Amino acid sequence: MPTSTSAPAAPATGYRDLLRNGEFAGLYAGFTLTAAATTLSGFALGTVVNQQTHSPFLTAVSMYGATFATVLGALTLMSVADGKRPRRTLVVLQLLTLAGVAVQAVPGLPLAARFAALLVLGFFQALGTGTRMGLLAEMVPDSAYALARSLMNITSGGTAILGYATGAVLLRFLTPHGVFLVAVVLTALALAVVAATVREHSIRLTRRPGLRQTWTTNAALFRDPARRVLLLGLWVPNGLIVGCEALFISFDPEHAGTFLAAGSAGMLLGDLIVGRLLTADRRRRCAFALRLLLAVPYLLFALHPPVLLAAVAVFAAGAGFAATLPLQERLLELTPDPVRGQVQGVESAGRMTWQGIGAALAGGAAQYLGAGTAITVLAAASVAVTLASAVGGRSGPARGPARGARAGRGRGRRGAAAGASAGGEIVRGADAVADPDAGRRE
Image 1 (cartoon, helix red, strand yellow):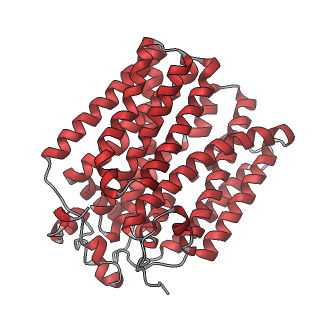
Image 2 (cartoon, helix red, strand yellow; image 1 turned 120 degrees about the vertical axis):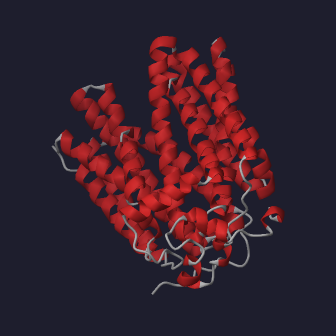
C-alpha cells in the first residue's frame, strides 16, 4: 500500500543531511549507478560503431542520438510518471534499462538492432527522469529540493567524466562487450538498490495516465506564460552553449580536452556553490547573472584567445550552468504535486533536446563561419535569449507558488488531486488555489 508522503520535519542543510534520509540515499545511489552504467555503455557502443563503420556521424549518433527518442517519450507517455505507483514505475523502467544494456552485450549483434535498442531506451529515458524527479520532490522538503538537485547534477557531471576515463582504461584490458557486461552489473545493482530502498508514494493523479493525459498536461504547461518563460530559460541558453562546446575539437583539436575539462570543472564548482552555499533567495537573485555568465565568456572566442585565457573563459562559463538550479526550483513552486513528475520530465527532455539542437546549429554555422566565429554567434544568441526571457518574465503575470504543491502533502491522494483541475490541467489547477501569501514567501 502507498505510504504517507509527508516530508521530513527538519530541512536538510547539507549533503550529509540529505543522505541521512535512507530513501533519498537509495534513490541517489540508484541514479549514480545508472548514470555510470549509461556512460560506460554509451562509450562501448560508440567504440563498436566506430570500429565497424569508421563513420564519425554514426559514432556520434550512437552516443547522443537517443536524445530525440527521449522527446517522443516526453510527448506521449510522460503522464505515467505521475501514476498511482511511481515506485513500481521506476522499478519497471530500471528493468527495461537492464534488458537494453544486456542486449548491447550480445556479441555479433547487428548495428540495426543496437540502434533500435538505443532508441527504445531513449524513448523511456524521459519517463524515468520524470518518475525519479517526481519521487525526489516527495522525499525531501521543498527547501532542500535545490540542494538535492545540486547533488545529483554534480554526481551526473562527475560520473560522466570518470565514466569515460574508466571506459578508456577498461578498453585496454577488455573488449567493448566486456565493458557492456560491466554496465550490466552496475545497472543490476541500481535496480536492486531502488527496489530495496524506495517506498511507494500516493500524492498522484486519480485520472488514468496515458497519451491524452500527457497531451492535456503538456498543453496546459505551455499555455501558462510564467512556465513558458522558465522553460525557455532552462532550455535554449543551455543548448546553445552546449553547441559552443561541441566545436572545441574544430576550434583547437590539440587543446579540446583541456577546454572540455575546464568546462566540466566549472560546472561542478558552480553547482556546489549555488546549491550548497546560497540560500533560496540568493539563488533566485543570482539566476539572471548566472545565465549571462553561461554565455558572455564565449564572446572572447571571436578574438581567438590564447589557450590559457580560453580555458579560463570556458571554466567561468561552466559555472553558469548552475542557473538551472533556481529555475528548476521556481518551476517546482509553480507546479502542483499531482503533475510534478511529468513537468520535471518534460523540462529534462526539452533541455536534452536543445543540447542536440545546439550542437547541430553549431556544426552547421561552423561550416560557413569557422569554429571561432560560430562559437561567438551562438554565445551572442544565448545572451539575447536570456535578455528576452528576463523582459518577458517581468512583463508577464506574476504567479505565486501553487498551494496544491504544499497543502497536498499529508492530505493523501484525494487531497492532492484536488490541487489540479478536474481535467488534469495544471494551469487552471494552480490558478484556482493560488496562495495569497505567495508574494511574501521566499
